[in-house]
Amino acid sequence: MNTGSNVATAGGNSKVGVRIIVQIGMLSAIAVVLMLFEVPLPFAPSFYEIDFSEVPVLVGCFVMGPLAGAAIELIKILLNFVINGTMTAGVGEIANFIIGCALCVPAGIIYKKNRTRKGALIGMASGTVLMVAAGCVMNAFVLLPVYAKAFGMPMEALVGMGSAVNSHITSLSTFVIFAVAPFNLLKGVLVSLIVLLIYKKISPVFKMR
Image (cartoon, rainbow, N blue to C red):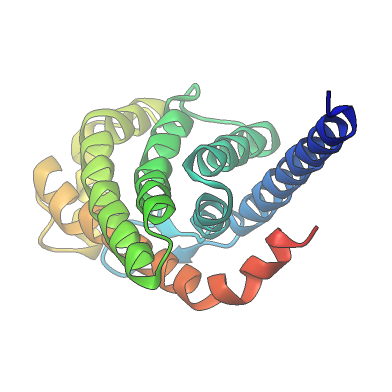
């Protein structure tokens, strides 16, 4: 029996497990902080503001895999829920979790199978497309109706807020086409670009023993 080897392996696995937990916690904390810094957009109502909290989530997907990235996204949403509360009884948070994972998890899956620059680019492009699709569906059928109810206003009033900044918005469908889709496309592209620029520089930090 190679008891010494088994103990060493168990100890190594334990250290790896602790390191992953610490990294998930660290990236989740960074994501929560980044959620506080939002940038308004000229083509969408004021309640659509871009933040870059998906950057640490996507980094986590690349470093530790898609499940770890999903965990970071979930912890980020839960911490923000605890800190800032909710006006949608948690529905908005669930939708945001799905939309965030639509970007990061597919990118992590593809990069895990092909750990090259090309694999990262294909993964982020695929994730961005899925994020746009998920964002459009969730906003049209979940988020916008829930927000309208939460603020006690008819859907037409939300559409009117969109029309005030973008004359192309005249209905729910055009709201999704001219505000929601460009919003998620821009966010996916910017998050992907930032990760592409910083990942190789910061990834050695996550591999330190």
